[in-house]
Length: 528
Image (cartoon, rainbow, N blue to C red; front, side):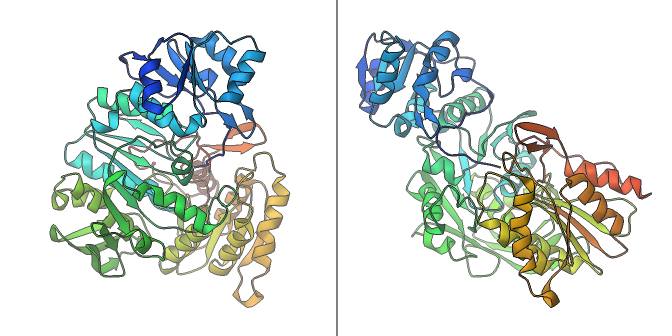
């Protein structure tokens, strides 16, 4: 899922608790060290977007890259805001717009206290239900859903907040960010408390950690998957990216679990850290790993709770680590992991190495991999399952880290037999220029080591081309968008679902795809 920098709109409304006890501004001022200007009114909610404001809200007018949020105060007041949290610059804007009468909480950096304010207004919900947070570059979504499968098997209701959306039992809400802004996040957690959830899983992005969205969330468990190049349009370099991820392990998580299979994980390990590895000695490790013809893995778990059989139906040996991490989190949440291991092994996540099965004589897979390491891992996972050619359809998103585009092209050209470069979500950029950056990396691979390279900017046409040219024993991997059901071109969100398009292409070639597997993971229009 895409993240954004300061000043972006917080997205559509999500959910709020049905009852919130009013909180006085004077109480909030004392809590955050703010200056109260004006009447000491009561507030019953908090918002950081005028279109998200409800009656009785405290409106957070924040400085941002695209301007100051105080410019939208009049709209927020029209929606029912009764007070404003802002800085001196915001106060001046209010004066210039004739809004000096509205009560204010003045602080030097409002964003830094917004999480604390939101948690106070909504009654500190993370203190009333266990929250497990997972950070890292890849594997967050897969791991949260594997944990959710284990919790459901144990008879526990579970909420989830992440890339695919927000799951409130059977209700699914879309969110523009992997981790929502602090007011929305605290409200969602309060809703989950109201609805009796036994726990909630959360994908915790580096943006959320750096920008304070998860401040004042008490994590029962904090977990780390891995780190590879991504979001370098936001972070200065990989070290800065890592330091943002490391904030989840600054003491805010009561228990810390870390996968130590890359160079970054070991740096997070402390005296009480629970370690996980599919390669090395760790508190949770795998042995006797076997891979079935369909890519599913089986293995023995060696852990602090004993030795038992486990597995993962999602292809890719890297998912062994995701499964181990999920089981370790479940153990920390008090679940009998031996009893729920079969449910975890059977779980499928939409758009994560999702097979589109039918009577075609080749393998068709849709995956969310949209980073160099993720693309390489997906191709390496599929290579042993491929007797013939490995064909990948791949693009890169616009308005995102440009530095990874040639790397994506190079990785795909080096590890596939056929690379079809196409569009992903070009957003405001020229799609042809994005493809050119990918192609530059792909064409830098020596001819003898490179895939056959094809360019087709029409994603539907590119997928149909891959299916049309696939033969017996081949594998078609459509990468980059996974669970998404939209393609953003300019300001328009066009309907587009990779799985559906693969199925259409199979039908057009005379094959009969099976019905989509039932799963509790609804597709969404969130974008990468």
